[in-house]
Image 1 (spheres, one colour):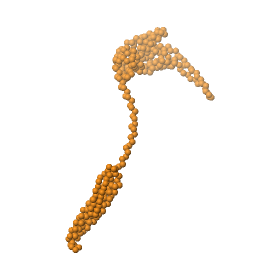
Image 2: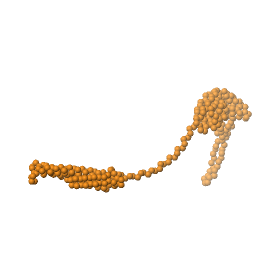
Image 3: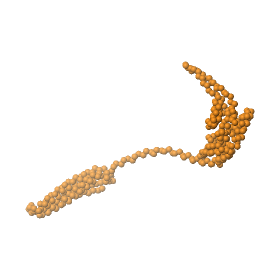
Image 4: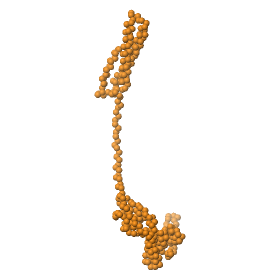
Length: 335
């Protein structure tokens, strides 16, 4: 049997409002339903849905009707709807509340109906006991998104069957989040909350990175020529000069030797015919000697010029002494 509501039909209240505007002003009237009217509409719609078996939509409408205009009859309908949904703990508490209100209002029939409902559900309740191994007054418990006082720990409490969530936190500890399933009653379940793990200490703030002082590039050292500052071409010139002088000396000596042989074979400036080829060879050697000497002198002059004009240091001063004579060339140096 479902309780019926004795809610009177509340007429829609008309609120008159007027405003004064500058030029072309007009009064605006708006009709707004009162809380009683809203509650009655929600109640009627909720009862219709509950009779059709659509509890998912019926129960929220009946709940909202009770919030808009609390009535004992509406509360009894909410309890019946929740009982049919299987929310035994919620319906049980609502029946107890309705019984107390009806008793105070001398509504015996409704008090009896509510007492019958609470008694019927009392033997079907699912109960949960939360326990913790850690006693910490700073611990915060949140059950299904609502605060759970630590004083309720260790007490067997009626809970609706189904899925529930538990969150436990404390300063300096990692937050524990757990899901649990409550079976339909009658049943009693116990959940032991484990010790909360210590929260990892926050890493120290990183020290600000100081920019490295700008380093001035080392002064560029002037490029030093090879061999103590003397340019390479000067040494090449000396090498060519020395080779030319040596070659000129050798070929000159050979030419003079051939000329001496020819001179010994000739008498009164008359030379045998076979000495003609020797004479040509002697002349050729003499020409090679002359050219070699010229090249040697030029190369030596170039090398000496490079050495004399090259930058020098006090500890690396070089002295070059040379002497060139016809048929002989001497080069000496101090480095």
